[in-house]
Each structure stands twice: as structure tokens, then as C-alpha cells.
Image (cartoon, rainbow, N blue to C red; front, side):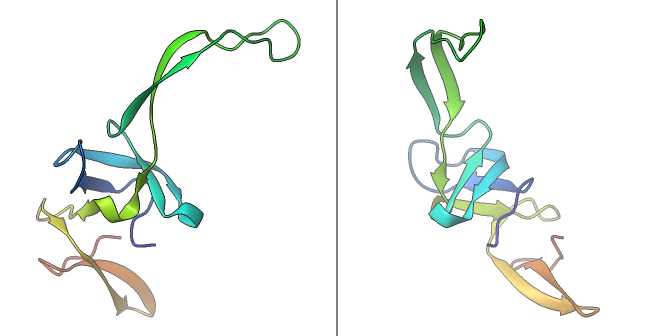
Length: 106
């Protein structure tokens, strides 16, 4: 996958268009990523015992839901613009490069 955990990405479609955030988690089997501050959903949760005396936190919980990887683009750390990702061999290792400014991302 061309997007990895810790990358800065920008949402290109949907309700959160043009928002930027860092990738918290990548789910490769479903082609999805979890981005901080993007696609926030609310879940109404009941108090339930989870064995012993501890309970789950009741109330309305807000968290980031996964978003499809085709709806985000990587932001280049040097030119600060969203860009496509290419690969190049440098020193026998494969590195990601920015298609706009040709700078290495890794």
C-alpha cells in the first residue's frame, strides 16, 4: 500500500473534504485507513459488565471510523501539497517519492 501509518493525508471526497490528518491505522484487507479528526461518528453505548466488576463506559462515544483509501491522498512533507506516490530504487532499496517535486517520502 502506498499510504502507511504516520503519514499525513488529505481527504479528497466526502463530507470531510480538504481536511488533513495523520494516519492512525491501516486496514489493508479492506483497503481502509483511520485518519485522526476525520469521519467522526457517534456511538450510543450502554453500560455492560465485562467480567468482574468493571463496566464499559456508558454514554455517547465519538471516534474515528475507517475511510476508504481511494478517498485520501498523501501530503508531501517537502512541498506540502497532496500528491500521488511513486517508487524509485535508491541504493538497492525501494523508496516512495513525490510525483510533484520528486522528493523522497521515506
